[in-house]
Length: 64
Image 1 (cartoon, rainbow, N blue to C red):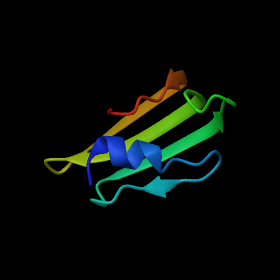
Image 2: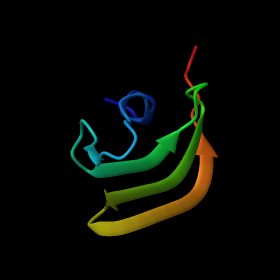
Image 3: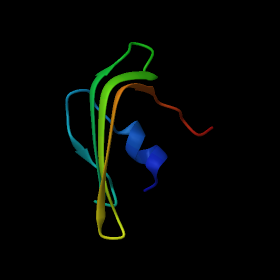
């Protein structure tokens, strides 16, 4: 499962583990158009190191 697949599974208010189990997502709110998100948290393990990303807002894209 890639990052695009993981992002498409995000649900507001729910922590979701990525299919590869090395990443956790949280989005507090998704706008009605399903592209804009608010209060984003991502924790990811890479080469044995934990990386944390937080953002007040963002947007979702789909690969087409």
